Structures are given as structure tokens and as C-alpha cells.
Length: 386
Image (cartoon, rainbow, N blue to C red; front, side, top):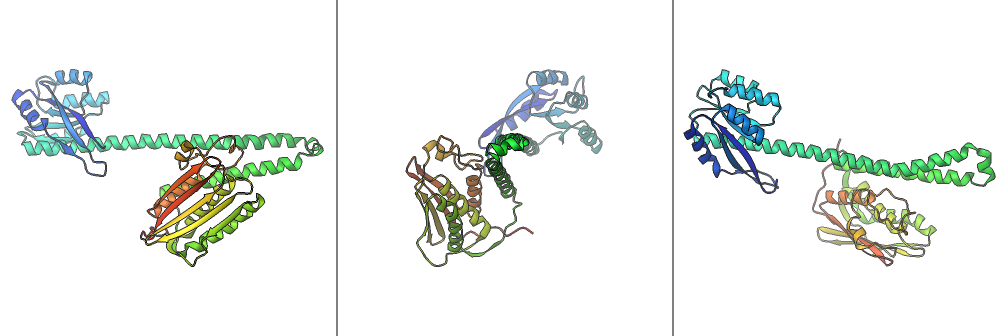
């Protein structure tokens, strides 16, 4: 909660002077909440002189907090608590009684009361209790909101995943239907082609599933890490040599500059490999025939800058703005045949954050793209999990 929230309090007491006194105490009372997104809670006060009047007010506009006298004309405070509980209304109630015995407190708690105050109520006791109730209420709402948000994100995540898997599964199923008539498939010269296409689709699904597992492990903190002193230049050099295999088939030149000595860094080697492999894979996949990819590493005190620049097809500004989101890929006529899970850069961004770093992209259509990663040497990543 980053602003002010207004909570409605209904004071139920047959003594008008007591109602007005509690209103004066609470009218300008403010509850401040701790935390990075700290906000405030203020209060709107309403009155009722009997349980019957209060029940009508609750039907018209349910309060968030109920200050309820134990002894009322007609229905008692405990009777009213039973009716509120039976109606399933989520109202936090503080019972106020001149007979605030243990038995009264137990009876009130059984009927759903949040707390009990003894009459006469001192202002500091009232404000302390309202602060406790307000914080409980707001934290409860935040927890419910977070739970709903998690449900929404989980549903969206599963929906997108199902959508991404549906197309390749459908394609493989179609290929298998063709292969049912083995003689026809062989006779048409399509047999080997169908097998290759099916395997490519299956490889794509495996990549998507593995990326999804990496993403969930990183976000949940369950990914095992091995933090040690490594040579960042050596990691980059190894990844560049691997990338040259696919790049060579398309006539792409991949280089690592400048040729320097070791660049020490305390890190998990596999995480840095994911960073380089994702950037190099994209630079090769989205490049043009005969283009180039240039990788550079520049140490500067406690910061290391990694750049991967390509001469590829580039991206429009709106595509570059969302490229680090989950399941997001640049989709146009030039890219629709290029495979990918749409999770690689999202995973990369999360890994970079583990090193208190950041990643950015600059791109121009038909000119090329440059990804820039900043890592801080001064940050010691958390140790590997057992």
C-alpha cells in the first residue's frame, strides 16, 4: 500500500457521550504502516445507538471495523456478533464491556470478536487497539490480493505455455499421421524430411520446458548455485567457440575483443554461461547471412561491462521495450520462422539481477542490435544451496 487508505469504523453504544468521545479520539488518528511501500490508514466514523440500528447500517454500508458495546438495549453485543458471523460478514469487531472478564473475552472470541476492551476506555488503549486491528486488516487484504495475483500469474503462465506447446505438438501429430502410411511417405521422398522436422519440433519443446524450469528455479530460489572465483574472459571465450559452430554454417564471423588476460569474478560459472549463450544465440539466430557478432568485456573498477553486438535484422522500439518479458519474442515476417522459447532474455535478466547488475538493449531495424550487461564485482552472490 503506497498511499492513504480509509477504513470505516462503526461505533455501537447506547451512550451518546461515549460514542462522541471515541469519535473525537479516532477522527484524526492515523496508522502508519512499515515497509518499503509504507502507507497510512485513516478512519471514517459512523454511529449506532443499538444493535438493531447497527445491523441496518451494516446492511446499507458494511464497516471494516466494529466497536461494539457488550450491554445494549434489545439485542446484546454477543447476540449481534452471532448474527454477523451467521451472515458471513468479514468485519473485525472489538467488544467493549464494563464486565471484561476472562469469561466475557472467551465468549466474545467464540463468536468472532477480534479483541475485547474494558470500560472506561482510555484514549491510548483505544488507539493502540485500533492500530492493531487496522494493521491486521490491511495485511490480511494484502495477503488476499497477493494470493489472487499469484493465481492470475500462474493461470497466465500456464495458458501461454500451453499455447506455445500446442503448435509443435500439433505439427508432430500431423507428421506422425503422414508416417502411418509408411510406403506413401517413403515414395514421396518425405520420410527423412518428416523425421527431421519432428525432431526439430521436439527439440524446441524440450528447450521451452528447460527454460521454464530454469525460470521457476531462479524465481523460487531453488536453483543450486556454485559460487567460486572464475575467469570471466575464459567463460566468454568458451561460449564464443560454441557459437561459432552455428555461425559458421551461415557465414557469420564471431569475435571476442579485446584479447586480454584473465578477468576475475566471484560467480556461478553456469549462470554466466547462460548470459553469454543467450546473447550469442540471439545474435546468431537474428543475424543476416554473412553478418558478424562482436563480444566485448570491459572491466572498470568494481563494474564489468559485457556487450554483444550483431549486424542482424534488428528490432523496432516497441519490440525492444518488451524483449525481457516472459514468453516475449519479436514476431514479424523476418522472425516467424526462427525458433525460440521467448524465455531466454527473461532468464538472463533475472540472473543479472543476482549480481546487482542490469541489462539493456539498443536496436535498429535492418542495422543490428547491441545488448549491454553490467555486473558488479563488489556483490557476493548468495552461496549454493545444499
